[in-house]
Image (cartoon, rainbow, N blue to C red; front, side):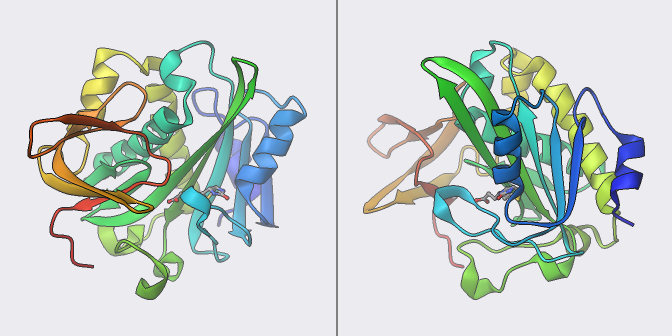
Length: 264
Ligand code: BTN
């Protein structure tokens, strides 16, 4: 059972998950976490909901969560000065890395799909949405929201999504308790938060990056670029080498990445 009392017993993990705000149903856990952050709630504050009715994805997309099917949570983070953590784009990558590593510990084939997706067996199983608040040039807080498809009922119909999706139980062939997944991902997140920006961190991101060294297409608005995926820089920007040999550094914004001959 996914209940507040059960979760409360297992949290915090590595300083993440306290205080815990659990909701049977809510609009968006990111919106609630941002409200709490504005009210001064500390680093590690966690908002979890069984059902989200106005969940948000990147670039204004909808991310709803039906009761009993998925994991939807948001953390308030107050990073202490590390430049890699002061950028929502970099935090999206860190949030995805945390989920990927947890899944790899379970023996799953998982990877980061830039800028904020987690792939399991080549399909999207989770998405991350980091949002920041600044006071002048001082970062006040970041809300790091994550949605994980746990049961089949959480996978939207193919017509509603731009990339094939999968649930954790489909990908693993067994059912996991949502609380167990949450605790595992927070443990992984706490580890990477502690060493973000180090060589180990950057190497790990590259090691888990889907399509590294492969031909990809990056598109957004009326722009479409092709090239070899060379990596991600410290700020979470994509490095793409064009056929002419030019290195393009691309911010996430409205862009989305697919393999070169992608056929949904
Ligand atoms: C994406 O793939 O575009 C990102 C999806 C992020 C969804 C999560 S679910 C928990 C948190 N609350 C939200 O409103 N969004 C994030």
